[in-house]
Each structure stands twice: as structure tokens, then as C-alpha cells.
Length: 448
Image 1 (tube, rainbow, N blue to C red):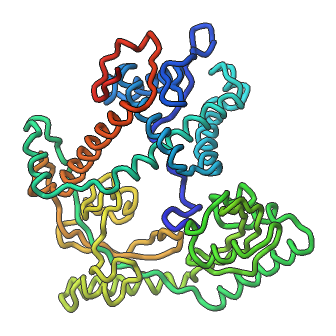
Image 2 (cartoon, rainbow, N blue to C red; image 1 turned 90 degrees about the horizontal axis):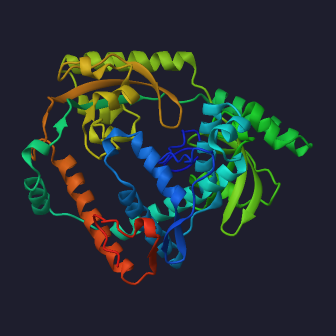
Image 3 (cartoon, helix red, strand yellow; image 1 turned 90 degrees about the vertical axis):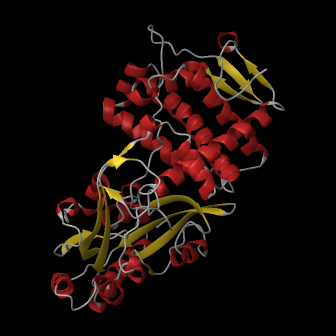
């Protein structure tokens, strides 16, 4: 339902995975390691992060002083976020907290086993995660706001590259550039009517007194919310697609919407609670199905197009512009890697989205047969893929890897900006370190 990441997509976790650290006797090692403005860094925060670095060999050299420096920067950002009234919703925090807690339950099997292995009750652990996640979300949001305007010029990218020692330049894996033609069959009007009828019957059952949440659990086809009774959590205007948002914000608590159609399917919505400019709602989603006959026709049409393209009767680009239903049709079907903004994919990235195509096995210019897949809004479709270029593994250079080097140079410029900003804030923010950390030689910050 979200504009960028749908509810039916999996929740992406932070890169850190907090886990409490304890003394041998099982007692939590804690206390105040640093005071930053009106916020604090606890010993347990440092020990938690330190334990995590031991699990990641690439960061094995990070010391507790390095970790404390990072946590001080986080608290400086949190401090500014609080001053600037940057908002982090309770629901947003709770989504991540629940993700971590569910992970612990999968690992240990029960709340009692979590307590036996960590020394903390489930609720205490939940409180610790709440604090850490809220700080992380807030600091990231403030950092993004601070560095959004930082840019680098082509000359600065070149200068950045020239400062890198040759033997430190990374080896770039073999990468691939691809184009695609997608045909997503149109759902028949009869199927749309069937879904409307099914939802109308469910709506009537709610009106007559049945619990919306129970029906959502039984019938909703949104796997991200069905198990939660269809509950979406609090959201603001602009978070959802227009049709859904307009219907949801027009409701009164407990009221059920008419049937709403969005790009994801058909919904009915019930408002749970209104809190300021945000609302919490639940929904039932039913996704119309494409008939097997229409899917077969899509596959046959794409296989015929592939033959036409191979024969030279039409170019791949023109065929994409005329027949593809994908958003990249106007660009002749060229596929962009959304993780780095380039048109290149390594083999691992292709396995995630184009596994059935077998791109690495294609020759340059070769076109695949039609393969089935699901679109970002979970609809069935077929596509053919052409391998445009294959870039051999090599050591990074400006000619072949400019986009990657640009991103690295931009990240470096943002880090430099943040170091300067942090130092300025340190000079006017109350900072106090515990005796155990007063002798730390921080790499980027000077603390008096």
C-alpha cells in the first residue's frame, strides 16, 4: 500500500542487530558511559555494538572507543532532531522492534528461553530495542536532512579517485546490462466483478456485526497485514496511494469504506483510530486473478516478439515502446538497478529478480524466451530479456565504474560534512565522558 514500499513487501531491517551483553554472572553490565546534551550513552549500548562487530569480520578492528565515538555522533543527531522537532512515529519504531523480537523468538523458541539466555525479561528487552531503534531512526532522518544538499562535481570525483592507493581499489565483479519487454495481461471485467461481489459480501458481514479483523485474517490477500487482522499501523497523508488514502482519511473510527480500487487490487477499509494528522486503519485486499488463457496469450505474444526481433523485423527498443506494459517501456525497456542508480547488475542481484531468465548464461545481444514472474504489485506477468552488455571482472577505474566511484565520492563528501558539523555541535554541547573512556583517542571528533 505504501507508495515506495508496499505493506505486502517484507520489512527491511537496519544493518545493526542489537543484542544485550551481560557479565558472566548474567547481570547486565550498565551505567552511563557518556552524556551528550540531555541524552546519555550507556555501557550496554557500547557492549551491544561491540559484540555485533565481533560477528562481522570486516569491522573486527573496531574498538570500544570507536563505537563510543559513533554513538556520540548518533546522540548529537538525536539532540538536533529533538530541538528541530523531527518526528518518528511510535508505529514506525514498533515495526522494527517487532521484527527484532520475532527474530529472537525464532532463535530461542519462547519468551522464557529468551530470558534464560539473555538475562532480560521480554518486556525489558522490548524497552531496550525501543530506545535504540528510536535513536537510530531519528539520527538517520536528521543526517539525511543535513547532507541532502551535499554534491560533488566530476572534477571532485576524479580527485577522489586519484587519492585512492592503486592496491586498495576494489575488484569489481562481472556485471550485466539488460533490457526487458513485459506483458502483464489485463484482468477481465468478469473477474473484477467477482472480486467486487466477494468484497461486498465481506463488507455486509462487518456491517451486520462480524469482526473486520477476523475476516481480514481469513480472507485478505495482503500477507503483510492479514495475520494482524488487516491492521496497517499509523500513517500520514502522502504515505499511501491516492485512492486508498482519500477513502481512509474520510472515515470515522469504526466506519467501513465502500469498495476501493487501487493498482494493488480491491479493498475495503476500516478506520481504527485518528491521532493528530495520522490514522491507523485495517483493510481487506482481494487481488483479481488473470485467467490462465490470458497468461498463455501473453507468453505466446512475447515468444513471437522475440522471433520478430531476432529476425530483424523490429528492434528490441521499438518493440518495448509499442508492447511492453512496464514503466521502462519509454526507455526501450532498459532496466535500472535501483540500489545504485546504474544500469549494471552483478550475478547475485540478478538471481533475486531474474532467476528464471538465467541472464549470466546469455550471450551479449541474445534474447531469452518468455518467463513468468510477479510484478512489484504482486501481479502475474511474462517478460523477455536481452543481455545488452557484459562487463568482465576488473579493478575499479573511472572509465568503467564512474557511477560507483561517484557514489563513493559523494559518500565521502557527506562524511566530511558530518564530521565538521559534529565538531561544531560538540563545541557548543555539554559532553561528559565516564573515567573509563576519558583517555580515548577518537578518530574524527575532538572532545575537550
